[in-house]
Length: 177
Image 1 (cartoon, rainbow, N blue to C red):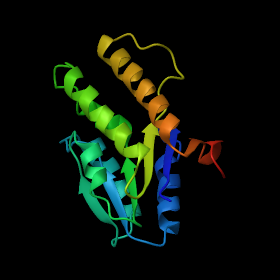
Image 2: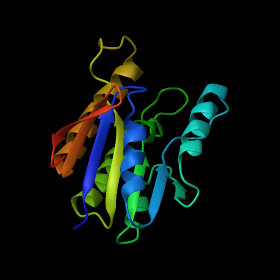
Image 3: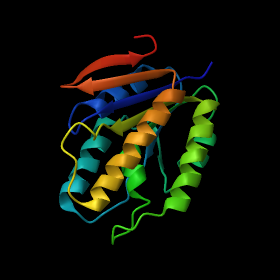
């Protein structure tokens, strides 16, 4: 049986490292699905380099655009797909002016949830937990927080396992530890 596992936590909580540790324990092939857009920002490039340095060279890499669900359908049976992260994927639906492509988002979001309901492989998804602070002042930021919060809830509902990571420590919220 293939399983799905959502791992959520705040910035620098250790969620990606925890997800990678689970993938390292997998006996079969691992595909790392990177969802972030490449940017010229030096600090962001440094974060990407840090993530790359932690990954074993034998893991395959898929850089996806908006079509995450379609990319997951390409997974080989018996493999593990690690998606990092859902927040960066959501950012692909906002343009440089902060406009949100609601139609494309709803279509791709539905596609992802359908794949997670019947996954072709073991899937581990990393996401940011962004709703624990104050309500953001900017409309674009509030919209992002609202959409990611709703996405996390819906993904958690279809996943067999859900883990919250805080201070590098995993707390199982759903499923077996």
